[in-house]
Length: 186
Image (cartoon, rainbow, N blue to C red; front, side, top):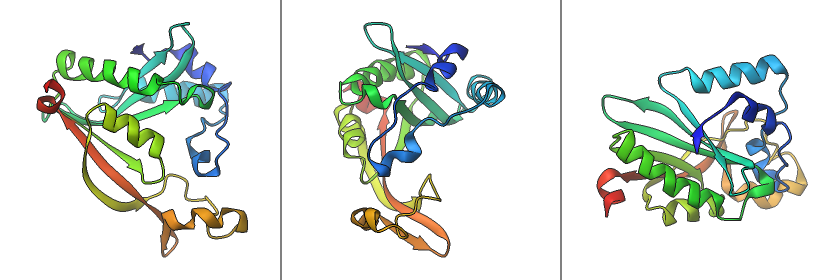
């Protein structure tokens, strides 16, 4: 795992797509050269963000781990993980996150790592639990894809249980989880 490289952003354009419509918003968007450069610079040169590329044993770039809302004085931040859909369910997320936690707590000297995971994302939730994250609370928050037509399309009816609308805002339940340095050491 290394800090994200510019050529890796280009490689994301060739990642697979999730087949489950619930995960459409997790697909890496198609971007032109200027948009990719902006995305890279925003992740690389912003004090409140850091991004790390993940490669498998065959040196294929398969995902990235991102930190956002880094609070350097308090030594806490929020986690985000994105993997090429062609490389999920292979244990890469759990392996990468376990390695990353060592770096996060020992090298970066951080004290706590927070995350939120959509209630329907059982695969990611299992990964986080396997890495030592504990549930803090479950609450409704804005869904990433406000254009997701869950209440407009009959073929998405089975997913309505995960969502609600407040006015025009589409909400879903998220599990808020965290791991502290003390828990990591145990």
